[in-house]
Image (cartoon, rainbow, N blue to C red; front, top):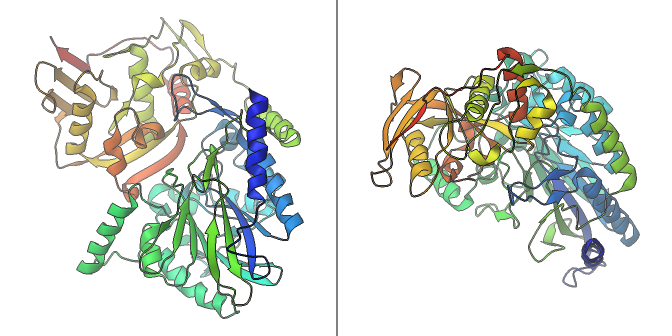
Length: 543
C-alpha cells in the first residue's frame, strides 16, 4: 500500500513539472512558490489528530516536506523556472524541539531545505529579540519586517530587512515583509524592549513606492497578519468600518484590511490564525491575492505564478493539484529525505533528553472520565489556567489519552496523557459567550467539558440552551457583559469538539501563547507535587 501511495506522489510531482499552455515560456516567466506559516516547531513526525483524534494518520514532518521542496527546486532549475521558499512567521515556539533549542533547530532545518526568506511572527519574539537576532545570524536567509524599528535609534531593527528583490532570467519581483504590529499586546515587555512595531499599512505604503521606483511591477508581501476564518463576513465588517470612518483603520489589522488600504500588492502570504485556504481570497478593491496555509508543519502550500517577461507584471497563477494550493504531508503519501530525517531524529533525541526524570509524585491514581468531573480533568484544566493566568479554562474529554499511576511522575507519563502537540490559546471573551459554550456542550447528548476557575450546575431535564442553572467564576456569578480571559487548546480554538463558537472570536482578541498543554501540566505537577487526586464539585449535574 505504501508503494502505491509513493507512486501516486511521483505522479503528483510529474504533473507539477508541466507548463500551463496559457502561459508559454517564451512570453512568461514561471515562478514556483512553496509557502509555510505557523510551523511552531512542527518538523518532527506527528499525528494528524485534527483529522481523526481517535485514529490519527501519521504526518511525515520536515523530512517529507524537505524531500518535496528539494525535488521542486531541482525541477524548477532544470526547466528555467524561478523558485521561492517562504515562511510567514511563528517558526519555533510550541514543541520541545523548537522551544528547548530556542529556535536553533528550526533554523537549521530551514537552512537545510533552503528557505529564501521569512517574515517575523509574534511568537518569534518569545525568547526575546536578542535571541531572535542570534537566529537571524544563523539563518542563511533574511528576516523581513519593514515595520520593526528600534526606539533608541529610530532605524529598522538591525536583524531585519524591509524587502528583497529576486531576479529570475531577467524578470524581477519585489518581496516585502512585515511582522504583526499587535505583538506588544501578546508579548512580555522585556522580550520586545527598545522595539517599535509600526502599523503594517504605514510600512508597506512607505517601501512599496521605493520598490516600484526600481522598475519592479510585481510585488509580494509576506506578513504574519491574518486572513479571517470567514473572509467574506470579515470583509463586510471591514467595509462597515470604512463607511463609519473608524479611526482604528490602518493602525494594525487583518491582511484584508492591509490589502484594502495599500494599493500595489499583487500577492500576500499570511498566517497567525492557523486556518488554511486551498484557494486564495482576492481582495475586491485592489485584487490582491491572499494565501494562507495551515499550521504546525502539517501542510505545505504550493502555487505557480506567471510573470509577463516584457512588462514584469503578474499574469496569472495555477496549482499542481485540482484541490488548490495546499496539501497535507501524510507519511504514507511521500517518502522522507533520509539526510534531513536523520538530522531531525538527532535533534529530537537531544531535545527530549530528560523525559524520564522525576518531576513529582501522585498519592493515588490520577484517573480520567468520559463524562463529568475527574481528578485528571481537573488537573489538566487547572494547569492550563495557571500557566496563562487566565480567569477560566475549558478542555475536552477526548484530549486525555491516558492516566497517571500512583507513585513517581515523569514527563513521559504526561506525554501518555497528552500525546498531541496542542498549545494553549487565550481568548478575551464575554460572559455571554462563556455561557453559550457551556450550553453547547450540554445540549442533546453532549457530555460536557473539563473546567477550571469556575463552578457549573447543569439540569438536563431542561431544554437545550437553558440547562445551565448556575455558573460562577471565582467567587462571583457570571457577568454576561464582562470580558474574561479564557484558556483553551488550539484544537478547540479552531472550533473542534463542539467549540465552533470560538472561531467567531476576532484575531485581535486571541493570543496563541505557544505554551504546550503538556508543558503546562509538567510545570503544574512540579509546583504542586505530591498530587492528591481529587474532585471538588466544580461540575455538578442535577438528577
